[in-house]
Every structure is written in C-alpha cells, then in structure tokens.
Length: 101
Image 1 (spheres, rainbow, N blue to C red):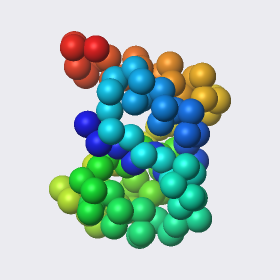
Image 2: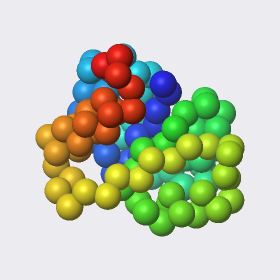
Image 3: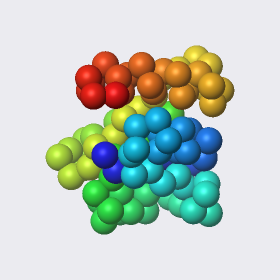
C-alpha cells in the first residue's frame, strides 16, 4: 500500500507504518512540503498513486466530492492526536482490514 501522510500527521507515524506493515509511506513534513496547498497534495497523491491520510475532515469531504475514484482519502477522527494514539488506532484499523498483519 502506498500512503501519503498530510502535514498534520507526524513523520513518526510514517516510520511506524513502514516498520509495522511494510507500507510505502511518505509524509509531507519529512519531504519539506508541509506548506503545500491541498490541491497540490492531491496532485502529488494522484501522480504517485497514494492514499492520503489526514486529520482534516474538510479535506476529505472536499476531495471526496471532486476527486471521487481518482484518489483515496482516510480521515482520522481522533480526540487524542498524539503519535502513540494515532499509531495504536492505525494498527487496530489496518489489522482489522487485513488478516496478514
């Protein structure tokens, strides 16, 4: 799976997803693209065929309406956005969707 973590997610989560699941993950912060407008994030995801992971519900809703089928967006809705919580909840979600991990 190829993922792109929006600038509101930590590079630590990208590293965790690589290490735990072997996913091809990039994050905007490590790429020094954290100021990239949403439209450019979508262009990057489309060009690299990546699913975007974000906390930004508006981002997900906007691009679901305009880019349906062209990109995937996972919007995380967590009260606690600490890296430890994000990683734990991501693991629980991803493990529930694939029995191999």
